[in-house]
Image (cartoon, rainbow, N blue to C red):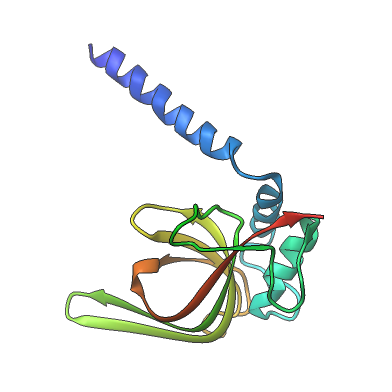
Length: 158
């Protein structure tokens, strides 16, 4: 019986992983391919939007300078996918841990969704975060956004 349950769970897990990968649009896959190739490196001048510019160029995606990185969508209603681009405007993120609060404010910032977790958590690839001019992966909890605007974009092929 244990073997059957383990086999069924393994099949379900494989199907879930395969299904998720299979449903990712090709342009998003190319964006992620680029991000993975530059992790830990400086892209362009080291500004946050340089990562989106280079990733979308690599993916042969169309976008409009300076910050319309594809087809806009409402992340609260639509599915967030790895490879989507996020433009932040006047955002404050507050994270609580025990008795302490960590607050981050960003007037303008650009990031790429690296992976999507559960309960509003996503991992993002970003550059020029805390003045670090290289590509890093950070985890955000979208429920911790206290003010400002997050605009998500789905990359579109040329």
